[in-house]
Image (tube, rainbow, N blue to C red):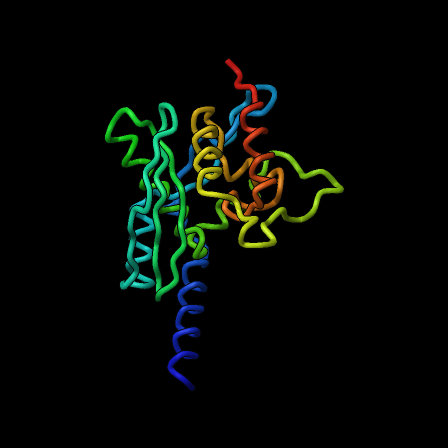
Length: 203
């Protein structure tokens, strides 16, 4: 077996390990969305340090860096990247731009969303949609070409608007397009942004 094939096999083993079901004791819950009657529905999530601990255990040589910090009104959007065995994937997190806690929270969310790209905790964002996609909708609205992929600016807007309205961007995207925000095409991302802007928040 060649060294290159060994590296591929090792990377696939890492992805398989990261995609395994999470222990129940590390899963937390919070209010994810409210239905038309105002009833709160809770969603599962993990803390950022739990994601880091799992990455440390499964692939100790992983690395993390902040790629971009953008201020959008009162919100800050942080783009973070995780690299495992030479493969880099990014995530975006948002928080209040007025204090260090908000910025740190955005970075932590970005780290978790980058980790999801490698399979860690992905199951937490699947199967929790509050409404079914339209019968005639495509299974996914993912980008077909690299230049059609959702932009970092669109992702930042999606997470910032969702955060401001106490919505879960992943759940909204999965409900509408059966895809995570990072997998959307530019046109679908624009539709999601318009949808989030038009969501009315109950008093």
